[in-house]
Image (cartoon, rainbow, N blue to C red; front, side, top):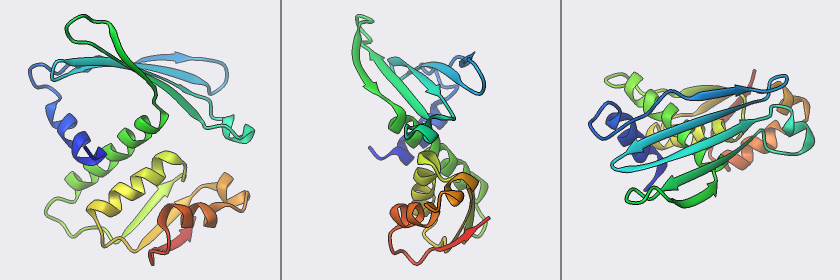
Amino acid sequence: EKPLPLRARDWLSLGSPGTVSPANSFLRLSGSRRSIALTGLVAGRFGSKWIASYPDNPHLGLPRASATISLNDPETGRVSSVVEGSIVSAERTAASAAVAAIALYEGREPPREVALVGFGPINRAALRHLREVFPGIRELAIADPALHASGKLSEAFLDATGDSGLRLVVL
């Protein structure tokens, strides 16, 4: 299933019988490094995500985040799968932004311009989801000083959007 309808269904299920989403557990490490543990139960299935955020990693040529997602067998509790989950996590976060935008624009004229702070994996996925639900978006404003300073913002924009006629504004 595509991330956007899946995320919308997940949000709608919160608070329903059989859905449990306890508070996240934050582990603050040195500097701005942190790790977050999330657990949940949806439709009889449960699991956890452990995601580490190391903001300096991109300077080392590494992704900022790395995650482990594990699912447990609902009958035995045994681990049934483990995956590296940074892409899954980015898609989930990005789909959440698009679901929120759908709610904000309900009954209103859809947006033609979008502004993003940062243009890493999460916001690239968010842009893709936003363009899926708001195909009239024609202008994208991006504030990403590090990407702009590296001279790679235009390249990242083209990689993410292709030759779509979307106008780029650098903030």
